[in-house]
Length: 440
Image (tube, rainbow, N blue to C red; front, top):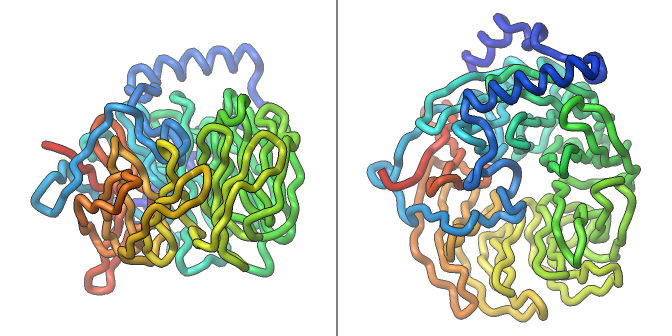
């Protein structure tokens, strides 16, 4: 926190590094792109196989790339490669591109929101304030830095909620702000719980949502300049789900759950493709898919998990009353896996919804499970990570690990190492840490 305050004073919110959207000429833009590319190559921040470039990873579904593997067991004395302090507070997951591990964070006392970067050895490389002041009221479980950054391999994109609006910013691999854009209003009145959705990248656009009871929209920004390329008005109401672009039912679809329906949009234009009445008003988890079926879950005012055929027919294949409110689910090899709010692990047949097994572990749960090889890593809010096999035959626990006493961020995996953002409280002092898990 002290580091955030000092940086805020000495860098003055990096004002000297800003390039306003639309303020650069085409020739200057070409020159800047060339310089940025050279800088990117020099700093090792270009996208590579094995990176974890955005929320839910390289496949956008919580599944690590084939061939990745991490230890199933760890402790303070085993399989911890390094551990480093993270300034401030946030629930954003680690975004990993090249040699950089990047996190959104916030110093709530100083009212500063920013981005911090570490290298693959755990050394902090830079920290850049993006906003000061205007932080909103929050739900006790939320933070002012809950959105995970997205990267196209050259720039890192962050979205913050402040001054009753959402602001997006692009940073280069050295932490310089390239552009920033006020994307749209965001001023919840009925439930002042804050913001949580993560942006997603589609080709050369960054897709951002802002859904609440006073305004509701979805917009796509040009990744080079921040210029708004398209916008779509949405129903007003509670929603914290992150949009995600999937190749499903033979085409690219922008998926979003909530508003008592499952919806798909054209990621190139924002235009609606289809929607199906189901689910509930408020959802937080991100949709997953397999074949031509999309799966989602919600938790307010009712609980429902649902499977919908994504071919535009509106067919609801099955649904149940399991509540995965804040966390997302996993689907692999024809089976859907979930770690519910109350800490129960489930496996269902993806096509029929038939329950294959369930096992009571321990909740509450906010982080989303991830799949590495045939192992599912699922963390609860108290810092316990359960490791079990993605096997529809039965629940097979491989390990139960403890790190810190708080875990809300979903882990990320790159180059056979897992990165966990956790927190520990001792003597009334809370400290976040970034932990690298792997074989030394």
